[in-house]
Image (cartoon, rainbow, N blue to C red; front, top):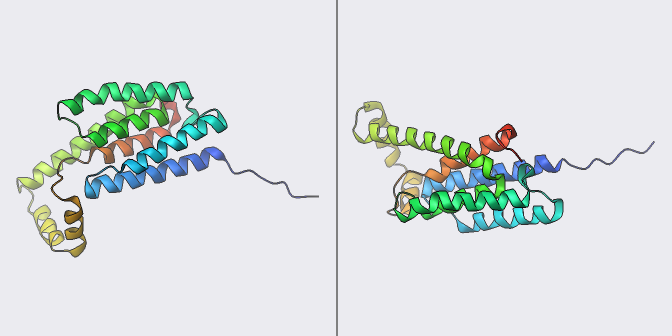
Length: 183
């Protein structure tokens, strides 16, 4: 009796690739406050390739729903960018999430990302007002570390909330619970 050859589960591989991609963007934005266009373009080409090869993309998203998600995300975030309430990387990332997960994922990703960004802003404010001495002690020790100095040097003068990091967390959570999606 010959052993059966088993094909790897393509959905699992797509999820692993998506988790890796979101993790890379999370770290890059959290540490350096930048969103590399190369990673966004890679995701777009991968999704378009999946549309062509499999007839669907990540989480079963159809090409039509992916394109609708992309356009809705741009319509939603582009005005925020025009009014300087959002950075360009945030807009591009949200549009790519629309392409990858479809329009139904946008609201939950936005809500989760915004809640986490709000929590970050609250903690940052508490730290800046020096309300919690323990946090000040930790930051004082951290600022002397060489790796932290390298991060600050790479970050340059970019400040602000790493919103893509929190949108990436929302995207991962939504992708792992497809009941949020109507694909």
